[in-house]
Image (cartoon, rainbow over all chains, first blue to last red; front, side, top):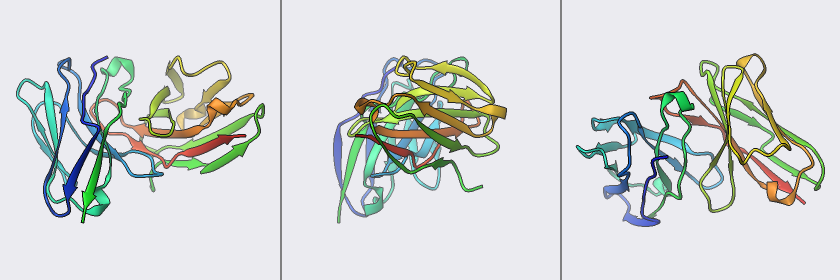
Length: 112
Length: 113
C-alpha cells in the first residue's frame, strides 16, 4: 500500500493561510489523493481530493506536485473551527474497493 | 438526505455481551464502509460492501465480528462476546466509489466494561 507522511502537528494564527504538507513518494498512477479532517468527537469530514491537477472547492485548495510525490492542502484563511486532525490519504485502486487507509494525520492548532 | 446516520451514538455493554450497530448510508451511494477508531489513532478499515455484497474484510475483523447489508441499503455491524479491547468508536461511511469522497457518520462509541 502506498503510504503518506505528514507532520504530527502544526500551528497557525487565525485568519492566516495554512499549508499542510503531505509526502507520498510511492504513489501509483491510479491513486487519488484525498484529504479529510476530523474534529473532536466527530467522524472524519471530506475536505478535497484530486488525481493530477490542482483542485479548489469552498473549503480548501489542493496543490499536487508535478511528479505527484507530494501534495499540499491550503486553507486560505484559518479560523478557530479549522482546528482538527487533517488526514492525507491515498485511495486504493477501484478493484480493491477504494478503501481509504488513514495514517496519524496532522493536528492543526489555530491560535486566536 | 441528511447524510450518513449511525445508531446508537453511544453504547455501554458488559464484557461477554453481544452488541449491534446500525448504519444508514446516503441512499444514492452503493459503497458502504465500516471503520474502527481508538483514542489518538486514525480510523482503521474493517469491511466494505458494494450494494449487498461484502467484498473486503480486514484481518482486524475477527470471527466475533459480522456485518451485513441486506438489500444494499442500511448495514449492521454485530460484535459477539464483546471484550474490553473492542472499546472504540465505530464509524460508517458511504461513497459513490473510486474518484469520489466518503461521507462519514458521527460514529457509535462502544465502551465495554
